[in-house]
Amino acid sequence: ELYYLYSQGTRLWFSVNPTLRKLVEEKREKYSDDEIDFEIEQRLAKWKGKGLFKAVHFCPKNSSDVADEQTARLVIFAPKYFYDENQKDTSPAMVFAKNILDTRGTIPRTHKNMLLFLAADYERLVTLKKIVREFKAWHEILEDSKKGTLNLDRLQQIDTESNCNLTEKNFEMKISQAYCKIFAPSLPDSSDNLNEMQLNTEEIECIKEENIQFASEKFAKDEKLLKSLGDKMLKKSLDEYIWRTSDTVQLGKLWDYFTTYYYMPRLIEKNVLIETVRKGVAEKTFALADGEDLQNLQFGEKISGEISAEKFLVKESVAKKILEAEKEPDEPEEKIIVPIEPEPPSTPATEKPKPIPKRFVMDVDLDITRLKKNFNDCNNEIIEYFTCIPEAQISVHLSVSITVPGGIPEYLRDNTEANCNDLHIENFHFED
Figure 1: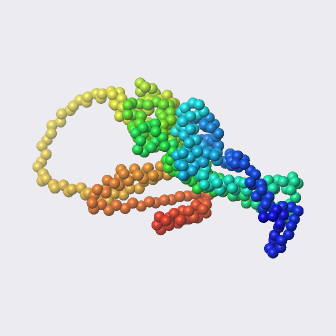
Figure 2 (figure 1 turned 120 degrees about the vertical axis):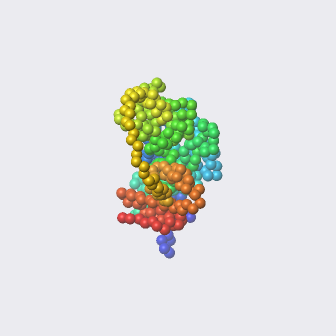
Figure 3 (figure 1 turned 180 degrees about the horizontal axis):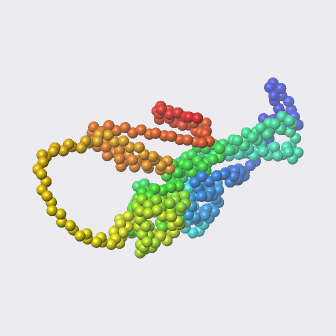
């Protein structure tokens, strides 16, 4: 533990310069927790990419730092707002998230259904901070050497540069591993109170500072962030929450519902809703009108051009009644009476009964962004009906084809192979 004692093999000697190990130990203990947190925040701010998010907020100091806008955004918390599995709902990350969702500064937040969160796990954060202390210590020694305030011999210089590179890679890996907790506000499944909220915590695994992209993909997979919305899904939400008391809804008001209330699907931006409206009108899922008086009703036709927020969505049943009432009655046709000649008697033929089908086969493409729901819908609405037939022989096969133009990374190949083995899946392979 002597500062000036060196060793190499069986050889020991004293030098006028302290050992690098002792210098590192001395320097890493002098940094305050605030300095370590600041280093982590600086590193987070350099993360690139936005995934499906329209904006990313890095390490907000308070709720006023997070804008109240109508686009999906990710909030990445500073190290002090970590998630602790032992505390869960009382973790600093959860408390701060609820504060951001409730207010922006001193005023209530309006578009709270547009926010999602990423925070560090407490246990992994402890490991990360140790790495950051090593990182700062080695880089400070390197800087002192370049300034001439610390005389290093050639071997020490090489050792210092090597450790700087090593701690840099460790910093990158450990900060990615630490920031693994993601959570989104949602309506509790069993709640009758539409204003109630819960934060569901999920975990991502990342080692190359691609956490924003990984979080985006995880939210999309779990249907907590949607880049597209089916017209039938929109109609279901309208029937369940909006059209209980009204047959119409203004598009601008409907978009406000999407961005404000947790019971509505979370869309990345308004254009997703507009494109769903285009499809729904063309498919006659609902209609579109110019105003509350339902003039210029569009139903079953392709809409080109811009769709303004002032237009109204109209229930399918209401649209049909309006269009039927607008039709002019047809002129009655003059009836021509033709005498009917008696047909010659014929021997009645025995009709053969139509054969009853004995087999049903279905082939359907599932939307990967809503895979779980699409599969459950197929099972609940189609397959389960056949299970009530005692002699029915049901077989369901899952066919998966995934193409990655840039190549599938080695870590993902290893994880996929291990998971397939755990699930007892034998028929799988990778192709060039």
